[in-house]
Length: 125
Image 1 (cartoon, one colour):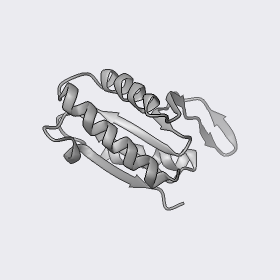
Image 2 (image 1 turned 90 degrees about the horizontal axis):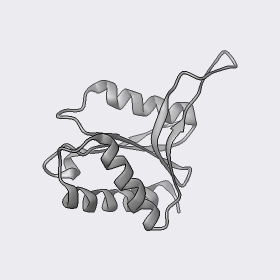
Image 3 (image 1 turned 90 degrees about the vertical axis):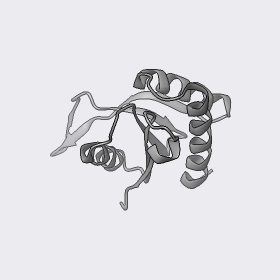
Image 4 (image 1 turned 135 degrees about the vertical axis):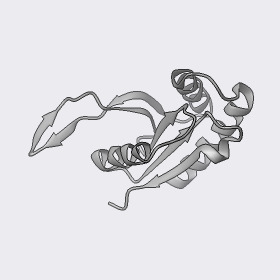
């Protein structure tokens, strides 16, 4: 499966999850539920994946973590906020660059309609 096929599947599962749980929960609740549903669909999912910063060839364990990594190809950064700020998009793009991956989904579950809270972010390597 390529990144686009994986993201299509993720988005469908996230929308179903949001229909079941609605808005207003903590980010950690959405993370656990989404990871469960993605695994149930047959996808490989890692949670809270450490993301080191390598600066001048020295690995810095600063504590960055990817919320979810699906099939080792797609990063999911989850939020449950009233509004996303530009820093959330920048953070997600930085995670893509640090990981040398191509695609991330920034998903804000605190929306009335989840499609308004889903943002595809692409690393043009």
